[in-house]
Amino acid sequence: MPGTIVMASPDFYEVAYTINPWMKPDIWAEDREAALARAKAQWGELARALGEAGMTVEVVPAHPGLPDLVFPANAAVVLDGRALLARFRYPERRGEEARFLAFFEELKTRGLLAEVRQMPAGLFQEGAGDCLWDATRDLFWAAYGPRSAAESVAYIRSFFGTEVVGLELATDRFYHLDTCFCVLSGGEIMYYPPALSPASQALVEARVPAERRIVATEDEAGAFSLNAVTIGRDLFMAPPPTRLRRLLEERGYRCRPFDLSAFVLSGGGAFCMTLRLDLASKAGRSRAAG
Image: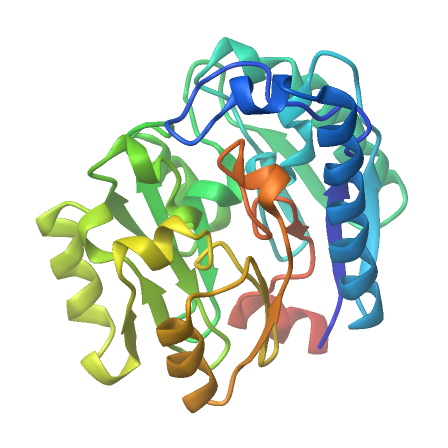
């Protein structure tokens, strides 16, 4: 069922630096005013669509000098009303930590979260961008490599008391797990295997039967189509290439494409622009019911 999702205002968004291979500050600088207007319009279209789908959208205020605040997927890992807040690897994003902490503490005060904790200082872990909940298998897929430390996998496991499968990212091009890996509501995994190390590819293959694996091409991952928000059978996403859209529709999914080009310039898509607060484990659902 639809629930609550966090987005962050794009008012101070820009592509001002390069901390991943997708970032294009030179293109942004060609016409900053037009680029920001385009970003605000694209953000608004996605936010409206999520609201129309039944989601309650909570908005983090923008802050000058923190352009990537607009990507709250990196803010935290949230499950069963408990939020584990990120520690960012790059100095350009570390200023976001205090802003997100204040916002999540406010959510706790309002009763939308039961607990808020930060990762230990110096233990890099970049939120749901590198830690995806799989409700079908009742586990997290948690990545390490370019942004998140390998040691963060054990910390996530300890904090949430749930199974966590660690996956090593093999390339800076797909620097967060959410750029190359998407968990679908029917139990399928849509992913680009070469973004993972061979050992991590084997972990996925061992846990997800072949008929549940949707293997994307590099071009499909590069279109940020895997960086999708899933609400039931609806996929809110950057426009998927024809082949991938056909594969998804054959499995009963509805692709909801959005022009997110202003955010792809920074290496982000629909999933990066959101964070679900209502994810629940089987144990969490049992506690809530009983």
